Amino acid sequence: QVQLVESGGGVVQAGGSLRLSCVASGNHFPFSVMGWYRQAPGNQRELVATLTIDTTATYADSVKGRFNISRNKARNAVYLQMNSLKAEDTAVYYCNGRNRFGETWGQGTQVTVSS
Image 1 (cartoon, rainbow, N blue to C red):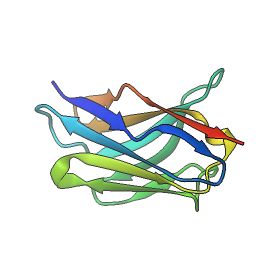
Image 2: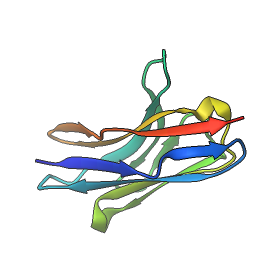
Image 3: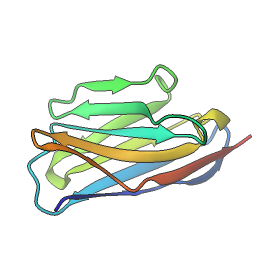
């Protein structure tokens, strides 16, 4: 059974940077899309960024120019480099992977940006 394990969350001051990592483990069909979503208290889960297997990236307007998503297909991993962080980026960040059989979510990692 596939698992997605996130790491790299933490507390950072506004203007700072963090890098999130997500690694897939277990037997699974390759993910055609991997990405990051986030959920702040009282809000719905929202898309942050996704990256297809052919490296087409999609970003939420709120993070364009500040965040960068990348993949390591050999390691079944996806990363999110977050720069110029703002207080409104505070949320639990979830890794997501999708293939023809469905989608898998990670357990989430907390990102807190202090102003």
